[in-house]
Amino acid sequence: MNNIDSTIEKVLKKAPQYTRFKRHALSLLSHSTPKKLVNLLAIELQRKIHRTKVVGYPYFLIIDPNNICNLRCPLCPSGFKETEMKREFVRIEDFKKIIDRLYPYAYEVALHNWGEPFLNPDIFEMIRYCKKKNIGTNLSTNLNISSLDTDEIIRSGLEYMVVSMDGTTQNVYSKYRVGGKIDLVFNNMVDLINKRKELKSKSPFIEWQYVVMKHNIHQIDDAKRMAKEIGVDTIRFIPVGLPIDAVNKDELAMEWFPYITSDSKENYIKDRFLQSPLRVDVFIFTDLLL
Image (cartoon, rainbow, N blue to C red; front, side, top):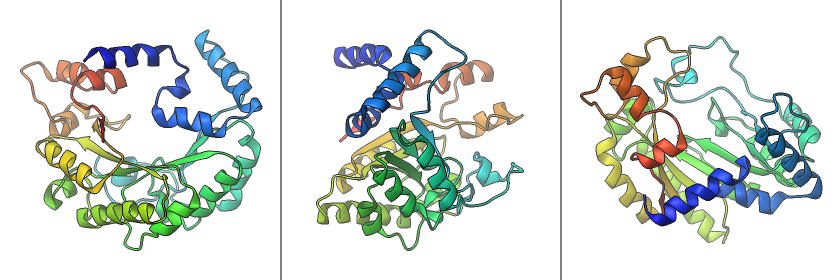
């Protein structure tokens, strides 16, 4: 880690939790009001003094438009279907009720969690409603959408999009993104970038997210090259996560984690792949800012 990175890390450690990532800081600048700022500072102060009962309102929301997905990723609860939760879409009426209650305090809404957000037919209305209420929006997508409306994505006001694509060839990509077509994802991403240029829009900011696993680690350099060629705003390499309630985590780690060392499996898991941003940055999975 060079001196600049070290300085940045020190600053981020002292910064309010919400502003530790660039996109959150930009959202703070874009969507602040006096009421939001007071609430944010109050929450951060209570976090600083380790209060267990917080007085205030959430300023960052996660609203999953649906828990339905078109892929079958082996380590995802939606993919391997090990959840008893009913599969359904969030109704636009219910979404608006949540926003109406919290918009005076909310800076940003993450429109994703366990599902593919573009499967919800009301997703663009959700984004537009957030924009109307002065709330930033971001979502994460596998982009396996055969009739993607790139024009609507840009005009809706979506601010940040994460595209999950873990590999550069179909056979490598589809080992984890089961049922996915890498050409479809890649072409959709290119079309979106071109449409953004055509409309002279700065948003959405496009992040290519690459989950590094044993079967795809050898394609990292290819991914960096491709990302630069097509003009994504950033490519980010992150460690693979294991299901929280999985009983066979050691087996899953040996199957999916990219490095096998001479250490015991337990130390291998603890020392190499704790899901901590700082540990990740120090190891191998660092942002490539283009």
